[in-house]
Length: 378
Ligand SMILES: Cc1ncc(COP(=O)(O)O)c(C=O)c1O
Image (cartoon, rainbow, N blue to C red; front, side):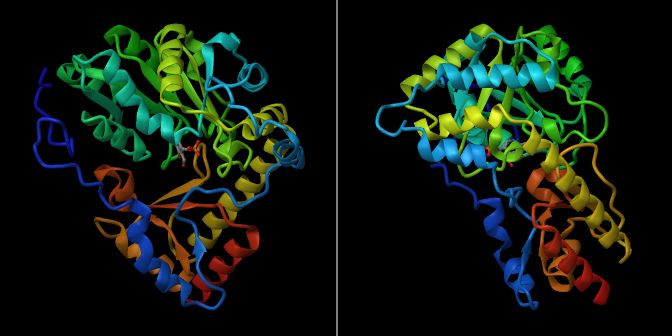
């Protein structure tokens, strides 16, 4: 069956005869600014990618080294201990009770985000659309493209075109959101998905870095038709280990776990053991929260001192800063040349993000202080 024609927001689909050419990876496009920033004494301070700089807790590294889980194949769905650790963490930190049968492992969450539409299309070949927040993490749209489907951004749930909703494989929400840190209404998202028969995928990888009010998961609103996606990358400074999980709607989680088993997607055995230790410990997250809050406030002051208006976000560890020009590149250039800092232009997160930059406070305090000194001197 030929799928319906693609929207203008889709970059590729099967009925287009040209071969798919992967677009340049966004961060690779920053090389020129990186070289400019690197010319300052002390070198570039990279605030572009949201990659943690602090170490994971010792107990996690210890588990990674001594699991003895190297020999055999690890369970694709996650070991019973892995899934129980996720269940325990959700109960402690988010106040929700989920049966381990409705939890499954993913190899970090990016592969799930980027791969999910192809698994959903196999299940519903009559559908072809992924709905995603207009200003957001780029992998939601890329996942649709990689599945040969349509990536359709939305600004507000009540503005989604009924035709797009009728074709939707899923809708993504992300709270706290990357890049803006915004806290959305997860109850409204769950209700919208149920009303339209569209699975709601809730990317909650920054949930413990919620600064305004308490952290929330979509699972508070029941499991029916919703799946929460969680990661250890940010929470426990384990981006290099690749561990996450998804939990929620029993039928959907069961389908994804089965199809992913066939695809050979597995979190490695030693990493599964380390993840059990990481989900089981909250003290390191409290310490990490303090570090990020301090860094966010330091950067807000440093920018304010040179006339750049920035405010602490409601969640996550990014500053979303308006630039003076339409595309935001003047501020990327100024921060590189005067501050020696590499930041991301807002257009990486959708055309609606143009005119902003995203600053990730993922460098140690002394490196951020260096940026502040350089800006003040410039
Ligand atoms: C919103 C969001 N989702 C998912 C990810 C992927 O994280 P990981 O694959 O390390 O779990 C990121 C990483 O920056 C992100 O910002």
